[in-house]
Every structure is written in C-alpha cells, then in structure tokens.
Image 1 (cartoon, helix red, strand yellow):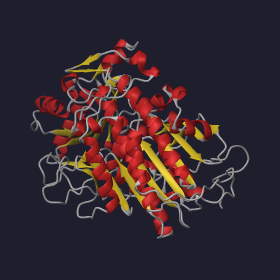
Image 2: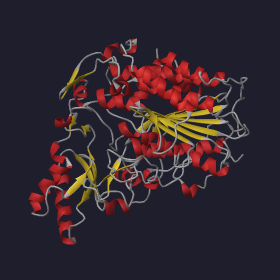
Image 3: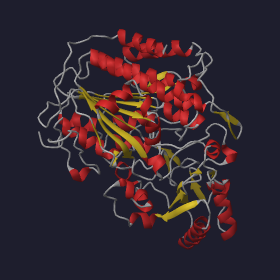
Image 4: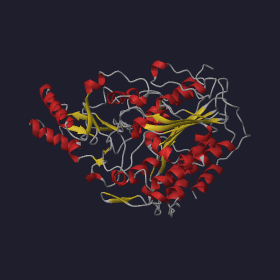
Length: 550
C-alpha cells in the first residue's frame, strides 16, 4: 500500500539515466555525485541490533554490503533530537554547534516562559517555544552542505524530514530546499514559495491522509511482543497502526510518515537532477516515525517491531529507485539519539529495578522546595525543561541569594536516590573538551560535550541509569523517552554504503561527528581540523585509506 504511494510520486517525475556501476572503492575512486545522509530518529544501537537478523530491504543492504559501525555514539550528555541532528553533518558536538537541547532558557527574554526552541526565531512577534517561526539561526557552525556550497556554488543542498528541527539542523542555513511535515503537508521557512513538486507531494499526502489505514500485518518476528502493557492511563504493546481517515496524529506516529518522506526525497532527487551533474550534491533525510513510535508506545512492543520492519522495506524501495536512475551515490545512515523502553514493560521483562522519576524533581516542585528551605523567592526560583537536564536560577537573585540557593539545591539533589550527578556551570566549563574513545568518557566529559557558556544552565542534573525521566503522573501521551547520558541513549548505528564498497564491520566506537569529515574526504573537500570535533574514518577495507588526500 505504501509502496504504491511512493511509486506514484516517483513516476510523476521519473527520468531514468543509463545505469552506472562504480568500481570498488579506493583512495583514487572518483567522488560520488550524490551524498544521501539519513537520520532515523531514536534508532538506537540496541534497536538496530535486535532486528538485524530480520533485515531483507534497505537495512540489509547497508549492513551486509556497507561499512558498519554498530556502536556509534552521539557522545554528548543531552541526547535529544535537536542536538543529535546538529552533530551529524557539522562534524561538531553541541558544545560547538550551540544546540545544547531541544529547548533552553534565556532568562533575559521578554516573554513569560523564557524558553527558547532550538529551531525558532524568537525575535519574531508573538513567538514562543510552541508557536514559533522556524529558523536555523541558533546553529553556530556550517553543515557539510554549506561547506560544499561555499567551495562550489553549483552544489545543490536539499533537506527533508518529518520534524522541522531535523530538516533544519542537517540542511543548515544555506540549503536550497528545507522541508518538514506538518498537518498541511510539507512546509518550509515562512514567506518562501511552494514549488510544483511540493504541491504534488502535498496533494498525495492529503489524499493518503483522507483514506483510513486498516493497519499492518504483524511480521513473524514481532509475535512474541504481542501483549498489553499498562502505563498510567495508557495501554500499549499490541498496536497495528490502525488509523481513521483524516487522523494526522495517527499518520505521524506510524510507518506511513517515513514512507511519505522517502517518496518526497526520491521525487526531489529526480526533479532536481541531484547527482546527475558535474558537482556532488547532497540530500539529508530525517525519518522521524521511529521516535514518535518510541515515545508513544515504547521500543519493545509490536508497534516498534512493525515500524522497524516497514523502515527496512521502505528504505529498500528508495535505494532501488536511485539504482534505476543510475546515480553514483553514497549513503550514510545513523540516528540522532537512542532510546529506552517504558518502565512498566522493563519491569515485566527481567528488570524489576526500573523506575519512573519522582515528580519532586520536576523544576516547579524543586523550586518550591528550595524556596521553602531558604526563604528566598517563589515557585519560579528555578526553571528547567523537565526532571533532568539544565536548571536555571532566577537572574534577579543577589550574589548572596544565588549562593544560598545553589548550595541548597546541590545538597538536596546530591542526596536524592535517583540522581547520578549534579554539576555546576563552573565545574563543566573547567573540564577540557573530551577526547579518546567515547565509550569511556566520564559523566562530566559527556556533560562538557553538551555545554555552551551562553545557553547552558547554572546546574546540570543527571539521573541514574534505569530511571525514566517521565514521572508516573505525567504518563498521558508519551510513555517513554530519552535524553540521558547513558549508553542506551548515546549509542547509535553508523552505516556507510556505496556501490562497489567492500564490506567490513568495526565494533569499536566512533562518534557521529566523524561522519562529516569522512564524507568530505570522499569528495576531496578539505575541512580544517580546528573547526570541528570529528575525525575522518577510513572507509576502505584493508589497504588504502579513504581519508588520504585526493
């Protein structure tokens, strides 16, 4: 059903070329004509590995024929969507990109909530962290596409995704086209025109949305996961993605979303002739459904199992289409962060020690407690975006009041049984930027990789492993989340593929910031090492080095 939708979009713009068959990769191999950078939101290394034996589509191609790093790392502590996407094509950690979280607080902002969304232009009248004008203004460094365009203005840079922050952070501020999904279809920055291709895509989206989805069949590998789990007011674990006609949320939180985004990406490649001219072009694709499914249903039920199976098949159809067009392309597939299953199913499945965070660690509750203990301020004494992450003290406090509040907060949090660590801004700032294997970094080194002196909080609160940062009282829409400094949220697959590439697998950890310099080396684009945090990784099996100067 979804393949028919993709085929219809592709046929509307199809213009096949004679097939090209690049030879085996070597240090003298000509650069690819198209870079395809795919981020599968919340596709953890655990999720990737769990279903690896069942892949038969696009993921099978990447894992069986490509270069596989099964233990890649979003190495920073704040493992959220916006910072994760900011690392993939910049070669830089959040400490350099400036994208420290999905949202942070600017206590000098005129608006009441003080919260800034990572992809908004807060200077726009009436902007808020939930109702905003999208913008790339907060990204402090160039993307690979931006560097390519600077070196050769003929380069085309396109970014499409299910989320605005994914499209914006991978496309960068100089991309030719940046599109993300909304209830109205795929939209872009305010005031820009909608080209004919996007009008066709949005018409197909509207037609698909208007039709009900009877759901998906359960693949055999998912049968053992088919049992209900109660979490708060939700029961999950047995879903098939049945959707009523016109139900946008049902479409968004299902494999249908990724199929539409891939169909759009393939049509954009053909319509714009990406990869068919003298220069190398780049398209980034943000597949967001796995994340929405993980939040809504957890990562170990039928819902996530079906989602991964459909992802594999839709990627296969997408790659097959590019093959038919004869494009010499290189693929990298990774994720913006990992994830963790909901507490209640973990408790059922051999992990009785799993727990949800205490609502006493919510910023408002914490603020009230500290105000009562110190006799200073009111309930807005401390601001934060949840019971973990950055905490910000009221900027109107005197130096003496601030010292008192900080001491009381540190004492309370460091004594809390669910808290792993609390670091002050000064402690993090004094820590050198981490280096060496990311799997062995200390907590404060992970925190340093997420730290920005202007945007980070006065304190950073990190919960212990196996503590889900959604309190029991808050389980209404999301049953599970990510964002921790632990490896279930940091570890992601990093997969490279190009026709003729000799397969090998490297189990040692690399970082997502290594992706950009590795791709840049394939196209002979110099990137000064002092401008990024990543390193080029050699993608040639055995002798030869893809990082060698061309």
